[in-house]
Amino acid sequence: MIALHNVDKFYHTRSGPRQILDSIDLEIAPGEKLGILGRNGAGKSTLIRIISGAEQPTNGSVKRDMTASWPLAYTGGFQSALTGIDNIRFICRIYGVDIEERLPFIQQFSDLGEYLYEPIRNYSAGMRARLGFAVSMSIEFDCFLIDEVISVGDSRFHEKCRIELFEKRADRALVIVSHDASYIRAHCDRIVVLDRGRLHSFDEIEQAFEFYSHSVL
Amino acid sequence: MSAHRQSLGSYASAWATQRRVIYALFMREVLTRYGRHNIGFLWLFVEPMLFTLGVTALWSVTKATHGLDLPIVAFALTGYSSVLLWRNMPARCIDAIKPNLSLLYHRQVKVLDILTARLLLEVAGTTTSFVVLGVFFVMIGWLDPPEDLLQVIGGWLALAWFGMSAALLLGAWSEQSELVDKLWHPSAYLLFPLSGAAFLVDILPQQAQDIVLYLPMVHCIEYIRDGFFGSKFHAHYDMSYPLIVSACMTLIALAQLRKVSREVIPE
Image (tube, rainbow over all chains, first blue to last red; front, side, top):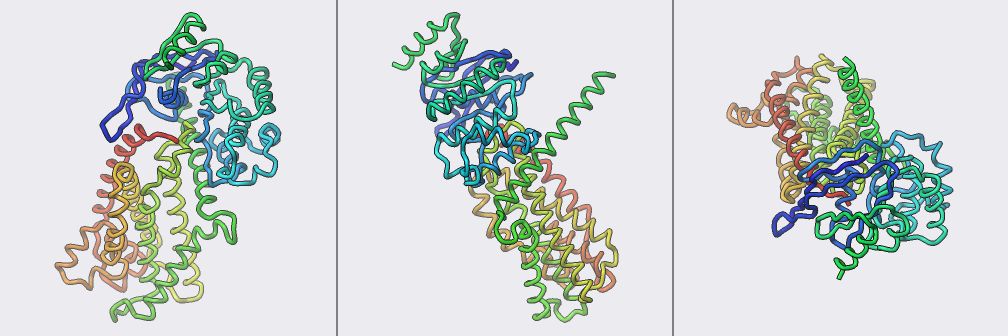
């Protein structure tokens, strides 16, 4: 279980403190597939970083009883000056797993070939996403946190993700934040909407999409 | 009883995580700084060694000991190694967070860990350079072994602590103001001649002695030299002064870093 209780987050801006998240209460149960919908600037990435523990809330508490991945996003998690393999080494060291044992899986899943020995800054968005997924799945978390990124990549990558994430790891929890309602609809069994820093929950999935389509207007 | 054991267990696992993270950051730092080209990580201590060698040569030629009957190699080695030790650490910690923001995506990695890894690397480099050069000079007969090795080690550790606490404090402040980076370079440059690297306190007039002894590193350098060749000069130091200053700076630095790490935004 991961539980956020009464979480506020403020960022400092030139015009003073700006509230990004406002009294967020959220629980993620083991095995649950949670979708967080929100338009650009709604605070989605901040929320997922607070869920992961990469950022601290200004007020409120976060309780984490299961292991959670870092937020798999377009940026972050990797040092762009280092090669893919050196980044893999770094991440394996922090999470205390044996790299030699995981490397075959990472190589096979990421499909990066020789690019694994190139600095990450030369990677395309899709290549970074593949590497991020490959490494996080080789470490085996109870809960995977995905910030948009799954929508990049080709159909081959989507198919691999589907098999590894939704079939082989169907028992794991999953949090996907996205502005893309159709992707969330296809993969999540509970949906909340983040709108101007406030989180809205719904009994029926369709109500959430209804609310979201109105909030986007 | 079981609660006690459990809390001990969680400390042990927290300590294990801490070690893993610092080790990972340390290895990453070695790679990003020195790469795998030519001699790679050996630059870690070859670079400070070249500095110290150059300065030792320069001071030997110009007889920087002011005509006193002092072992010039010991004077230069202790002096310049000490400068590298206290001056490089703040330089490495100022603006150290920004290039590492992407690593903060991993929950275990904290701001303090990033700075600690850099500090360990810096201490390892300058200490290795100091030791290797010292042993080398002794072997070729240019340097007499320290009269009191433990005192040299103690002084070195005290100076390292001073450098670390200053580095952590300036590193934390540099997150809050760009002025820190701008002001550090001129201050480090101006502090160098005052830091005791190139003079002995004893040769200064009384008034000047009172002033330079406000600088904590002067006490440490005098203490190190007293351990090295104390029978050849009269050393001036009060080691409680740098230790108290370092303790205060460490406390303030940790408080500031706590604030910084609550506000930092990984990217």
